[in-house]
Length: 166
Length: 268
Image: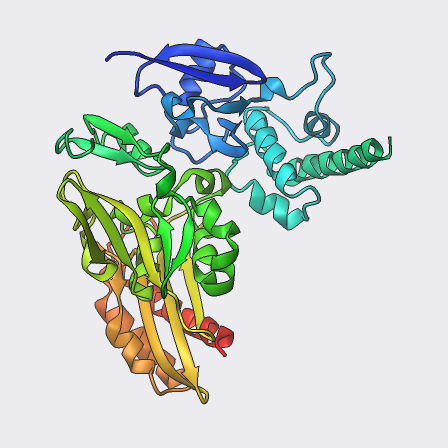
């Protein structure tokens, strides 16, 4: 099958590659861009381990073709920490609140949490649980994941108040 | 372009039904035509007495739309019961209604609301009533090379009450059984009523007899029981991992009764 050139912005930098029309976005990210943070869990759009942010939406990259992301703006877990290594509030939250056990679902959870907090900066516990209902954790349940997102929400809203004051 | 590519070509909307089917080798289209770049297929507008929704409008957009929230909240309420947030950002109403999957939620809502589908093909445009669209599981009135471009829904009267009741095992699941109801009342009695059923047959069902049976009643226990029985009579679910056929048929009736009550509580 003839390959097609795709160009997109990934974690703030231009990225491009040749893909087959059938290449899934997750395979392009993992195998061609070497971004192995997004995981392949179920490969059937249930588990959310492959979640990335595309043009302001959380999407399951196992259920999109790479060509559908042409020209898009993507953010993956690799783009969350600051260039100096300072963790994003969500990453810090997952560490502080023990939001991960095996860690397999964590990149998807964090990327979903990222968009959730953009849309709902101060979510209730119910809103968090409903908001991450497309992400499965098979280790230990969701209690600490919810706490991690609450931690990040508190930190991010505090930070924005501080920024506004400056 | 779709028509020129022939019978083995499929339009690609959100892809959240088609791509999983392709992975399972249940679908193997030779060509896909991505509709993502066609702006005219997106958006919600009012045209005369109808709400017109572009086929590529996502479930997420339905939930967020102010026009729908004010005039037809049933759509956003139903969309919230479909899949999960990530899928709703990408999945479209056109794909949901046109796929012909008996598990999809929007088709029964469209039967309930008396919607019609705008269809484009090489021969031009035509319009098909949702109630005439579904022929079997994954079989619809669409001919090869045709696609649904918009959904047209008559704006329900002010003071209507509507509800979608869906029994499912967990978030993201298809319905064990589900029912959509819209009704209006006059002096405490049902004046008009329409009912659609999801996932209890090869196609979505318009439960005409059940809806007629409650007109003129105050939805007392006897009326609810009769409507539920009439809905159960037309349901023909398969036994699957959501339950045996007898259970799923019974649940169709239970969902009808619950949806009737909730729609009534919302009606003026």
